[in-house]
Figure 1 (cartoon, rainbow, N blue to C red):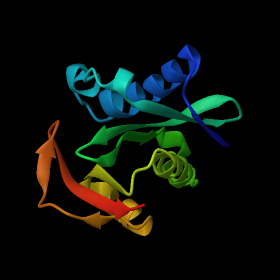
Figure 2 (figure 1 turned 120 degrees about the horizontal axis):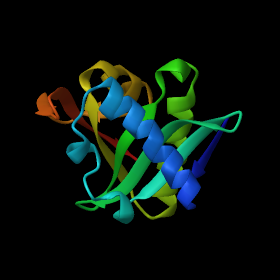
Figure 3 (figure 1 turned 180 degrees about the vertical axis):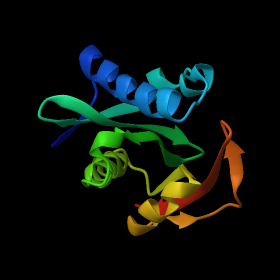
Figure 4 (figure 1 turned 120 degrees about the vertical axis):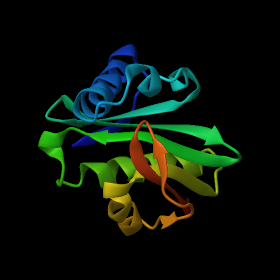
Length: 140
């Protein structure tokens, strides 16, 4: 497995393809919400297994923190540590860029995943794209 900063058009397309599959096709998030116009201001990441894109994430500045968003792993590859590796690379990049904390909006079913990575819930449950979430934060 390899996680990379998606800098080429092909890598960015790969990351977007994973996001479309997970969020739009699988979870039913409306395309206009998933494609929110913030991709160009964000650092994109893609995870590959045997050359095929299987994971994605993005990182952007939000109120002085590193906001980690659009973390997705294809259903066929979940449970193999890809999400944790993806998060490790995103967090490392955030540290390199000078951020001292990371925030994210976690879907309720994956709150435990983020807790294992050191994140703490910092909000009441709220709805985003019709899916219950919690804001979470971690010092970097």
